[in-house]
Length: 133
Ligand SMILES: [Fe+2]
Image 1 (cartoon, rainbow, N blue to C red):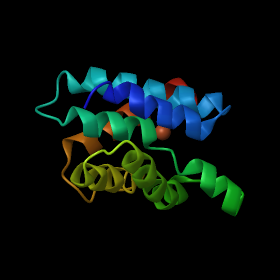
Image 2 (image 1 turned 90 degrees about the horizontal axis):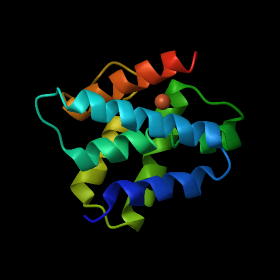
Image 3 (image 1 turned 180 degrees about the horizontal axis):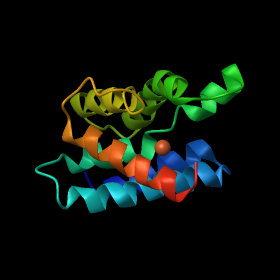
Image 4 (image 1 turned 90 degrees about the vertical axis):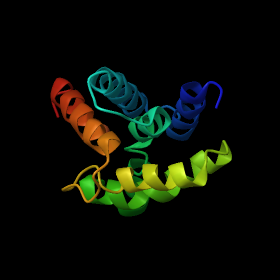
């Protein structure tokens, strides 16, 4: 798919609007995911990009509906939003499913043996530490 990274970045920016902290976090997680990917065994680059950029996409709805967010609510609210956004750019259904599984599992013990999930978790950990969370 042409300009895939830019397409997903636009979805992220349009969705989070002026929440620059979330946008910046997602871009940093993608940057670190790409660095880790260079030394990983194998990886679907589009799945990694979509997972990295959209991994915290559930935060907005969680805060709007519940008034708070945490790892568990991010995992719950994120996948339906990610599915809708990725459908809007005609991302293949099978890949959307995997991205949603990754988002639904990025804050808890891994239920899937996906290298993209492993990379995302590691990149998120690094960025959270750098951001002082
Ligand atoms: Fe994160």
